[in-house]
Figure (tube, rainbow, N blue to C red):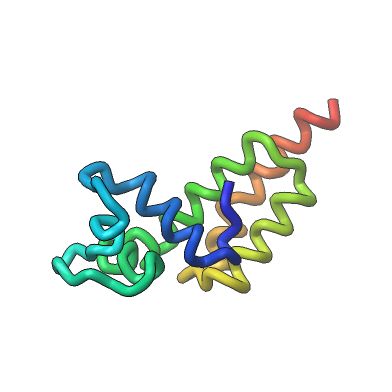
Length: 108
């Protein structure tokens, strides 16, 4: 898992998860428009991989499987402060029920 606060590594992770046609770092830095960007952070934006909350939801869903509620809250705070999701409140409302279900499994 890569923290969203490590923006360059997080963008690289996103590219590696979603791009299957790459053979080099230059391919990863190449955007959907064919332009080779300077950093890994710019390329996933051109593919709309980091433009909406899809990647944020995926990250939270992955962490719900193996993290305790305190770690999930911390991750959510990091996502909201460093990644700027389009709808923080919507992400919270969607995930809070799943967090409580997961926490109930550990409490029993």
